Length: 202
Image 1 (tube, rainbow, N blue to C red):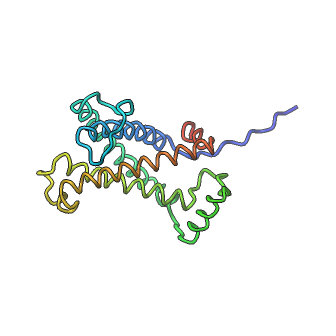
Image 2 (tube, helix red, strand yellow; image 1 turned 90 degrees about the vertical axis):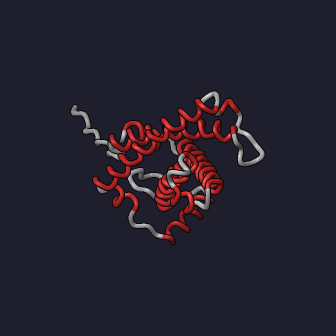
């Protein structure tokens, strides 16, 4: 008796994408937790982040972790965007975009009926979220440069509305990225095969 031929699993995420995804996850974790420790040294608002959720142990240590993670984050981001453009993945995955379809999918999501059968294609909500987090990441780096080297980037500082405004922009971007991560992790829990695809590629 001949064994039936197995249908080959479809490649969803190429190796370069998976590597950059996990490097980015590590860099973001380091940046956010060390950033919380830095924030605690000079809070913007009337609260602190619990020390158990921060990285660095003290302000100087947190700054070292933050800058190290920043370079990893930026270099990996350049690699990610370059590969997306060169391979044509950005065009395939993010176009076309339809506002009408987005509204429809938001309605399906609210009712718990949005399908995730085909992981090789992004729906409109994913397209908006992933492009949005890339733009947020760029704005986070720009505002971070103003906070770090305010004198060296006077034009960027003025565009941000000054040093204190740049701190607020940096904090707001971080908060939105944390929200994105929380929703991202929730979707992984609801659709576990997305995690397998990001590990195995198929």
